[in-house]
Image (cartoon, rainbow, N blue to C red; front, side, top):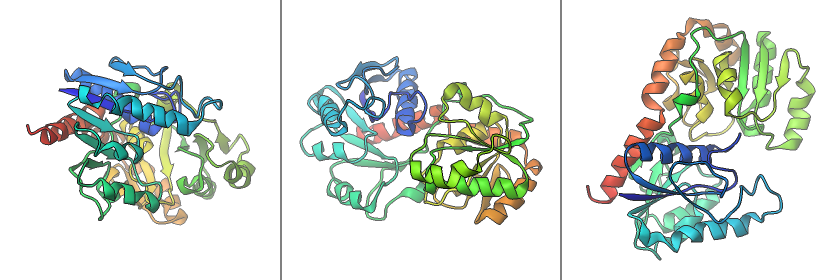
Length: 336
């Protein structure tokens, strides 16, 4: 079986810091290789992989302002599609744009839908619904207007994460600094609970950061660590008493949630999107509806067993499990 993995090119694959779609594409690529699959990764030229690497863009356009994103995306997608006949199956992690080639090539294409950025993009998915295969990353993120071949949860690389049976005394926010991710709610909950909070993540909305996050940063109770990479991620996650994930949108997955639990750290999350699929309420974390409930959960966090968090996450959300599930999808598409 010859598989082409089409990664996004906003960031390197795997990303140096932020880049969840690129991270999943990397984890799957390396997982397939370990299963003896012939894989070609289409990503940026500076990407790191044991697979064959094909590229048109020198680096991620989010990392080099001299690159025009639309131009790089067009060249990147065409690099694969013009060579589609070389592969048995194409696995698209690049959202809806590659679907426009679905009727022009004979190679079957499976698209992992990493969430819908807007309802406005659904018509593209609908147009190619019968000419492509869609995979959801959670049951909650399935659109009633589309057909799906499977739900496959994102898989994390547990070799980069360390388990801690003890944890630490601080709370952690780990994710994009954006209103929908709820950094301001995490700050409010930590203050009400009288706990220290560390925040780490890419500032995606500068105005929001300046107005609703920065005024609370005192480098004592509330600290912002910046956009951290894999080297610091494990230490931060395993050293926390809990991860605060007080989102204000229907999040399709949440890699940091799975990563935290794999380190033994329970998660306190808003009961939205995929959170009920990722978290076992009262066992690996707490699902809450508002900040007061989050504060109550913070005071109960030591009632949860960190070993149960670890075993739950490593049984359901690893790159090995994800790889097995995608191989099953490929075989279904290719007829066995």
